[in-house]
Picture 1 (cartoon, rainbow over the protein chains, first blue to last red):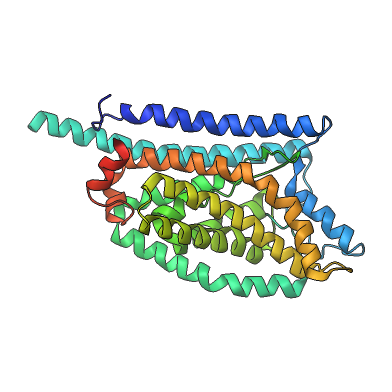
Picture 2 (tube, rainbow over the protein chains, first blue to last red; picture 1 turned 180 degrees about the vertical axis):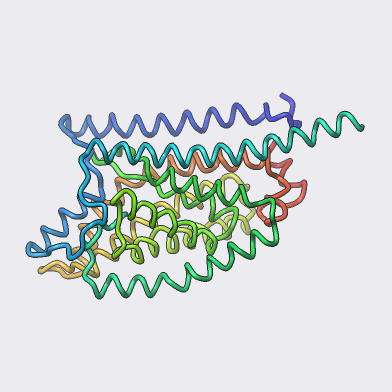
Length: 112
Length: 229
């Protein structure tokens, strides 16, 4: 396996680590179901709110979100939008550096 | 770890905002200094901010039968140091509070303190210690991201326990209850976050090594070979 700057040498490691990440995420899901077949996988942030209202039954949030309570479908859409926008910026930046690196290499190979 | 809008009493909300403010203001200045000193690191700065934006939007299932989200602060902390991440993380939280009703303006200070300040600094301390002890770059980055993620949620539990002490058992009892919601749930997520952070760092070393060297994240040559071999 060449260890040059062609980028191929990192592919096995990247695939292995991402594969492991997927295995852990899916494994967590399966483990959660194995402990409780009706697990709902509700958000921990929301559960914390429930604990607050358990401890202080009369606690009332004194300020509401400026955009108001959103329907679940709309909210999940906004989360998808957030991930999408972030992905574009992240991918764009990596692509910018990758393109520059490639340009540098081509310049080297034509002059040298 | 996003404490929802209005879910901290006003005194606590103000106190955490005051506690977080100097870190964020200093971080903003460090961002300006960094961009001025390393102009070609601009896209890299956008990339680490976007990474946190994406990661903190993704809810993953966990072994406890609930789900939670990573923080994505490990990457920026490793490359740009904690002060810069304090500013970027706060911007991420501000976006989420304003546009997604996730977190809140009144709880921005507390959320910034846990996700953008305490987590990154704890992670960076571990990273620094491991590097001093001769641990490889990528394993140290993994530990940084793992610790930054987990500590964020522990700090959130402290914040909630201080604001809502249990009638019996007080702050300690509340802390245990909030920790029960967050901590175990977060462990597999923190591992996943660590792995993904290592992958992104590895890719960046491939394509942007000159910036990473000038930012002091990579040593010239020796480390690049260590990682790439």
